[in-house]
Image (cartoon, rainbow, N blue to C red; front, top):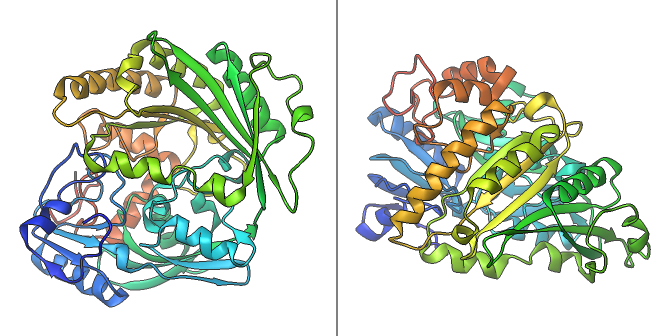
Length: 454
């Protein structure tokens, strides 16, 4: 079912089973029906039906959440993959919520353009990443994917079809970008594009320790010597960690010739630098084959934390001391991205401290039935989350502790910071029955339906 569309209203066992879990394969909750959305009218009809019946409803693009965010227990799951049109006009692209980012990039490149920020895996849906924020290796320069949205077409929780932007219905626009699907279902987005590079000159560096890696990565973020930066913490067979940094300088017409000069003053292991030049499209799409294998059977108890850049080393070191590298050896990854505070204009994803932040991703893979490893990881994650809160960290809400008892009502309020009162008001205005995207269990109050109040 992952690569096909649900064509209509389905209640057969196999389709309901497809709609009962997500990429994480940790949460399971059967819907009553799965609807293949082929037009805005389908989504409007589904929302209105959900209101009449008083049942939950959740949109599912690629189902790449890891804590059941695309599930609707005993309710309606909307398969959005049919809303996948991509059309470029001038410096903008209009993309359906179910369009994958690889399709958006392919069509944009035909016009010599590209989105300013891409997630590293391009098989995600446009609606899915815009509901969370959208972080990539360019975010230390360009901010979030949601910062480059010009306009959204949505259906609110009350069944209203609406267009919104910074200029028109800004309250709805702000409630939908990184709003975890709480106020409306995104149908399509108009996104800004930039000139597309032709080449990606990649530099891979190795480091002796975490401090050197993070010091260099933060300096490179500030100085913007490169266009893309990704820190990686590598589990080793000796139950220790390795440290690496991947940097990319984009070329327009030819590969840059000054890569070695841009490495001056960095503290990587001498002689460890590796250089490679590929096309921009090759670098952007390099993870496509790997993810397909992981999707089939494994569990993905991921955790993604937003940290104040100045406190990140303290938290990352704490996490590495607790994590058993062996639990991440089977296709797991630990990664660090930078996010520019000055470029971020998404109210609902307020960066910790209101300044530059780091996204710390712990992405283990657990084989089916290995409940011991799953339980051990979640206990470790709980301790890391507790320390992250103490340091001012927040959640990037695709993984732990979302939908667990470890994410408290106070944590949710802290998560949205100054925007929390506006978010609560938007939820009441646009989804008054509290039907949309129930599994994150955000503790809104004063809603009439059992699905929405947490």
